[in-house]
Length: 134
Image (tube, rainbow, N blue to C red):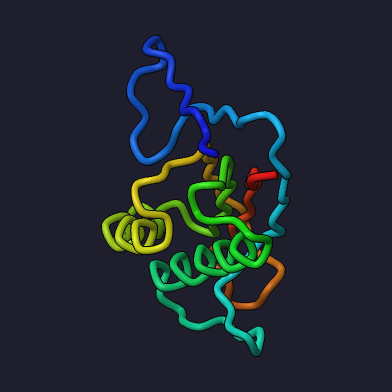
């Protein structure tokens, strides 16, 4: 079971995401709550932006795997950051963290800059939707 990437030529080639992901019929939908960069003690693991991004993404993948899925089943992610400048400055390291968890799978994604996150010290929160095999 795999998603079909939808990238109309008229929108240009996306970099690091897909414009759309079509899921096969009969899959189970998993909604993953926003995950921040905390460990099993619910403590933010680092002040470093890229490290926080990596941990938050690993937490998303942990939820997907616990439901019987894999990173390639993620069809959509929304990434909330407290500073787009920090995101941009750490882009190379963020890319490495992304590939470590997701490989070359690029779901439909949105990045949103926000004023703050609920968890003290958190700079990144990632929510996802996955479609798992029936």
